[in-house]
Amino acid sequence: MSEFNLLFNIGFMVIAAAFSLFVARALKQPALLGYLLAGVLIGPFGLNVFSSQEEIVLLSELGIVFLLFTVGAETDLIKFMSAGPTILLGGLSQVLLTMFLAFFVLPGLSFEASLYVGLALALSSTILVVKILQDHKVLSSLHGQLMLGFLLVQDIAVVIALPLLAAGSSSLNLGFIEMLAVKAIFLIAIVALLSRWVFPYIFRLSAQSAELLYLTALATCFAFIGLAYVLNISLAIGAFLAGLAIAKLPTTWKPSPLYAGCVTFS
Picture 1: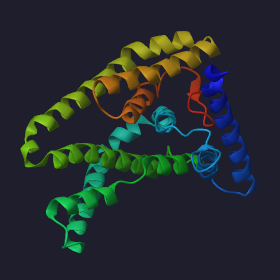
Picture 2 (picture 1 turned 90 degrees about the horizontal axis):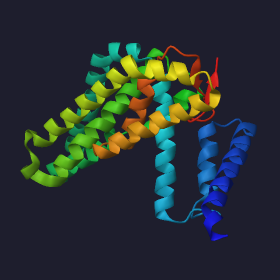
Picture 3 (picture 1 turned 90 degrees about the vertical axis):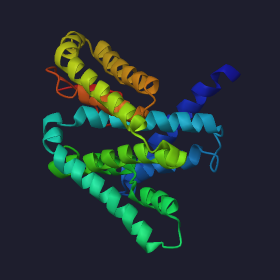
Picture 4 (picture 1 turned 180 degrees about the vertical axis):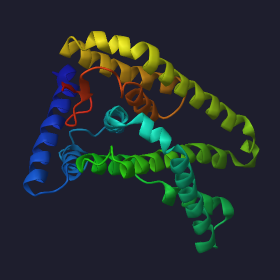
């Protein structure tokens, strides 16, 4: 029966999530609290269904990936890009101000240590905020898109800054930033080309079958995840870009808000 352990564990996880969500709804609490309760129930401090660190990291990464894939698919790309200067200026200003405040408020720390503290304080929980915005159905609004943009800018800023700080002064060259910029331009170009010339045709054909449409959307998500892994960037960013690539396709499908991998028909 050992070969079925993973299957049973995943099934137990789904049951715990459904039960916890019922409890959260009965108590008029956000769905996020229900999912957190489910994690506590099946985690090492609960029933210990998942005790391996590798399994816990894998499941949490999958949850983040599917959530951001759904967010990308629900994002109005035109509205998101039109707010680009505001998002970039606001996100970077918040990160820089937090870093400078940490440097002046904590004078006992070294400059490098204060930068670490400032980055930690500037980094918000993208997953928590996005889930709350989704629950309140305001993610597609202007302020929801601005908040999402600020969070992504914060994540990208930390991804850039932490390797530079960890390597010390020897890394203070343009090589790392140039490589990151090349990867970003490459990914954005891939998204633009596929969403313009490839995905409309593929999804128009796959929309004739619910099963094929579901598998095509899921395959798109994992293809971008694989590309992000190869380029050594965040898997969640890859999933978000996958969602953006299929966000405005001329088909009748859309991601279900109940489960990131599901699709429904309008």
